[in-house]
Image (tube, rainbow, N blue to C red):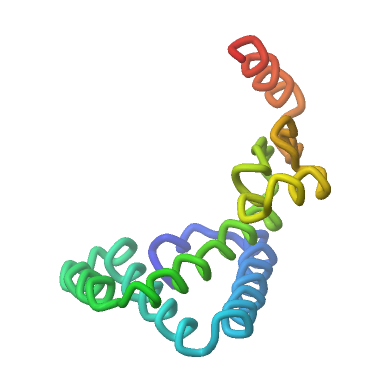
Length: 148
């Protein structure tokens, strides 16, 4: 067990199991949508990044730079597209409140007419209420509206 998780309790196990399950779903999605070559490259980037950031493995930084520098433009576009699945997954699995502008985020690839048809026109803001304390959520919304 990594030092990062050494203080975890049994109550954390279901959450970690769910995160692993979502990771498998994401991996399968990337493999199905972008192909095994992109999936393998993402895994190499992910594992090398973990070694560098979590384990403070200095040689992993250079390895990561070499991987990224060696990628073609086509590979880079496919990797960026695949990593966008991560942000969609984060929205699905997150329990925190979220406010976004769908026209410039989740629906940005659509034409203006398609955005409007999908209910994501330029004047639409998505508000997803999470599991935070209700009073904190209300205070945050009031502060945001006052500064808008």
